[in-house]
Image (cartoon, rainbow, N blue to C red; front, side):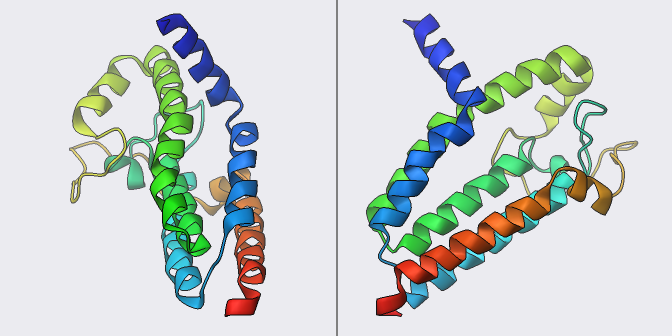
Length: 188
């Protein structure tokens, strides 16, 4: 049974965009947003995307272990940002059931993703990653945390943000918020 769960988790991890499409369609189909829900959700989306941009500007995938910027507070700031984005859209929907369901869906999709990525990082960076695991929480940040001596992890780089295609996310978020406004047009 454990093997089946692991295999399913790995499939979800490698197909997370495909897996979330039905949830996004359902979100918009059930949405009954109000001006308040859209504004509240948009604030969460803004915080989530700000965290994603900060994270993207500090990570050089497959080259170095990211330990600076938001990676001092959580090992998975990009996914924490994603959780705020998703929760923001759930709030925008104006449906309490969708807000309550979101953390469950997020966990089912991202727990295997994080597990698989940590295996890769452990193989690639060994004791350096193990040390990071001892100091930095997996998901929920520990505030405030100052860098250890010698720990910096590089400066923020807008070129990395562009390399990680974050402007594509901006376009998607703008489209999503616009669609949410259209869903609630009659009640706004």
